[in-house]
Image (cartoon, rainbow, N blue to C red; front, side, top):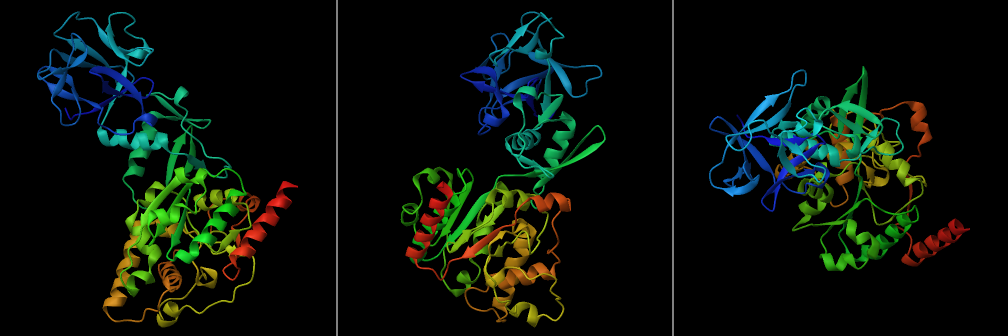
Length: 449
């Protein structure tokens, strides 16, 4: 048989700890070094420690450390319960004993209560385990939901998994989780039960700031202060900068520093400076976060940011009005030079008011689009074609989004959409640092009242 890992009845995975066979909850499984694998041996199978180690389980003492297995295990399938097995040690001790999970999470052997649920297990592949762990550890946002749902460990097992208040069959979740893990361009998962279809979207928001000048840091700090007005910050903060980490960290409030992911940027010439966002997205694991919100150091959010994150997560593609955000002051429409030069491209949506990339842009988290954008950019430069100087990245991405028809409206019911507030903000690029601080202090005073 192919090596497999084993789940206990309560959706824990079998691991080795201090030489003993124990169970570990999936959400606390940080790496796979402690896993044990069920491998073929002689007449049956045996437990082997680690993916490469050759320490085998001694079925007489239920401890690891043997270079060759002692005894073997017979897998007894349960009638009318596909995929669920009992593990019967053979070749040592009693021939009527079965392995079972104790209340403390250890694995032991006994002859009593053979049909008790603690004596059944489920075998899965390593890829299936990884997919299942990702599903269990991920917050999922349902259609029209206001809060994300989490896997309820206390009521989940190898027959059913509870997500929020909804129960799904284990096999349904496993297939969907495995399909999700194999896709690089999607952040949603579809489950069904009792004839109902449910769509959930990963909800692990992150804010991305790109800092290229030391002069931007004071206003960056103001932008963080302004976001903090909306309550406790518990999302990831990604800071991509040409500056060193120590130069940036001093401008970040102490309570936010646990949420920081710092990404260094290397800009050697004008070509690197033309597409800073594309360069950053190509260098980080963008599937870890969703939605990813591109921020600016000279923007103060004026709408309900939490509502915006919910709306952005449920959006499959881009809507100019609701997803990329809008400024609270009018911005003169700019002619896009890329669209102008490509007679085959008819713009359907005008993205990025003022030529600045801000907000959650779903298609930028699509790896296929990123590859296309980077390839197109390099092709333009190598051919000596027209590419404006710094600040043209927004026009370039808007051009590609229109050319590949990525500018579509939001999913979901219109009524539910109206309940949420769109992302709106004030552009304070023309303000002095003193003006920004005075405005924030005055707003905080009003909020306190």
